[in-house]
Image (cartoon, rainbow, N blue to C red; front, top):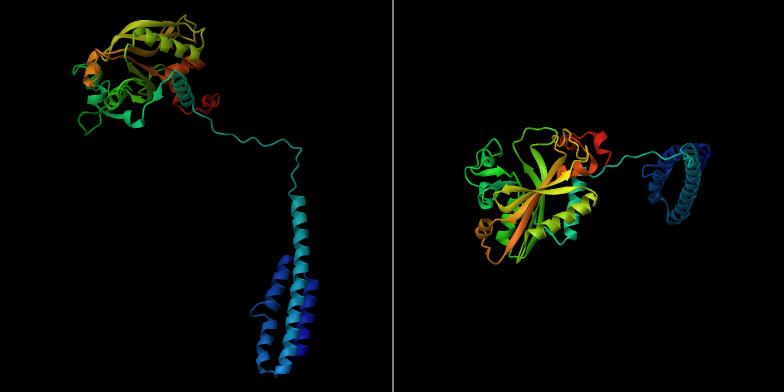
Length: 344
């Protein structure tokens, strides 16, 4: 048995010297040192030897096993280092080459415009209304009734408002003004909030209108609030958003939920007030509606109009973005054209 072990050792040693790859080393390890390898097969016969021979042969078997393990490891490390160096040489990176451009996603212009508007009003002391106070799927009660909109008002026709099929009195909100009611029902004055969100109207789509767009609603209710406060807040917003050089104007208007009411126009940036298709030849684009909260609206939510007054406003995000970035077609915001979006 002793001679058998020596012969296997010499044979394994010869195989290791002839090996040329890591795979060869792994095969040799399996052949000689695995559970079913030649050394283990001989070790099984130790039980038939005398005690003295067991010690002698057992010690020799362990020594040969250890020597082979060392030889295999040494050879394996040599081949591993060689293959690693060859791979590093082959895959070497030339740090003098220019890097590869990896395109990154960008914030959509409507999102960035909304964030900018919200940031401006927050700097003026407004807070953002909780999402539960500004749902997109709304009831006629909040979208119209509580806003002092009469039952026969044209805005309530199916030609102007999207009604949810199968749910009577449920609509896709046509304005963010309903957020006013939710907030006033759940908060006591003073109230100073804005509510950004999406709105839906059954409009013919053209360069100036879409049937889906974005608004930001504002509401300020407290003691001794006047129309002068309204003009002051909106003029400061326009100055911060457009810059002081952009001409603006307030025009008398009518909204069922505010009295008195006004619309704010900003000079068309596309034609500099000369008239173009974007502004329908007027030289101005209306960007928001506003006014003092109607006393009926305050009474409807349990706020005493003899103690409190307030103003409200609503502005179109798309219109504001068009004016700031000289965009002449609202549809560009929704076409997902990379050539357009990459400009922002």
